[in-house]
Image (cartoon, rainbow, N blue to C red; front, side, top):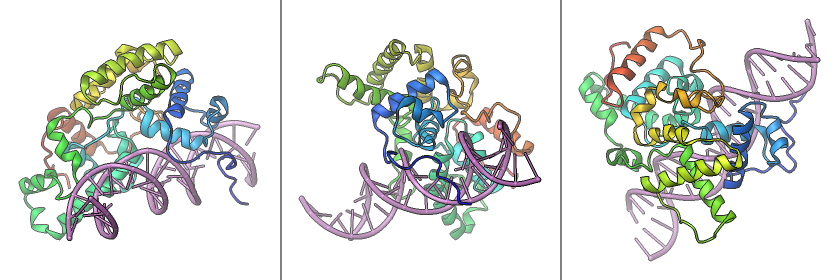
Amino acid sequence: MGRPPCCDKVGIKKGPWTPEEDIILVSYIQEHGPGNWRAVPTNTGLLRCSKSCRLRWTNYLRPGIKRGNFTPHEEGMIIHLQALLGNKWAAIATYLPQRTDNDIKNYWNTHLKKKLKMMQSEPQLAGDSATYHQFMTKPPPYGERAAADENNQNPSVYASSAENISKLLEGWMMRSSSPNQTSAASNYNDDRSKFNQFSDRSQQIGIGIGHDELDCILSFDHNPTAGLDKSSCDSSQKGSEGSGLVDSRGKIEGDDHPPLSFLEKWLLDESAGHGEGAMELPSLF
DNA sequence: AAGGATACCAACCGCGCGCCT
DNA sequence: AAGGCGCGCGGTTGGTATCCT
């Protein structure tokens, strides 16, 4: 028996999502919460597969997602967790609640795998943790925009999902109102005002994202370390199911972590003690 | 300046698991 | 108990951006 397609292929749109589609999806999820993905395309009229909707939400639109460069600490966590768990990106992502499994997977494939390969080709580096740290944190020789931007603390680097929503909303509002309104801008103040616009507008159209929630989201953009303390946003996130740091799968707050108490302890200690500071190799492995 | 090479990342695809009937 | 269905996960691809020659 062949497996039936997850959704009717006829009339299903593929490829990049448009701002309009994002708006529709976000507003629907804000109203109904994530889940029941099968019903999303039919209820919203989106010509997208349910899978595509879920993916778009979890990897891009979900609030609390930190995008852009990974901190050395995050790198360290990924490396160790990957060594321990293998390519269980979803499991790894539970320890990095601001990152999506897709993001981690991409980062591993494009950056870390390469770094580790270089490590293996220069094994003398591995024996010296200070050198290792230097090696792990130095930017790769080529095309490492993220690492360069890290030093600038460029707000646009930490582009949260809210910023994405803001951007798409900006375009949406430009179309739906005056065509000569704001052009694309990336500085903090512009973002700030866009967030306020978005918040106001969202209230009007019933999406229901308040200023507090946007403030919380903004804090991820401009204070990356704050993300490690997820309690900082709990109050404003609790109300919206699956829209907080905890993804729709609810893995973070649950007790279903893998039995990694030793590692877990280290990770928690690292988070508490180091923030995004220099990664140091624990003597665990 | 232009074309090729490389890097990055959003999105797709197919499979497996678990729940429900 | 078995099959159907929906969701989640991991691997992969394709488009775009950036860098190099």
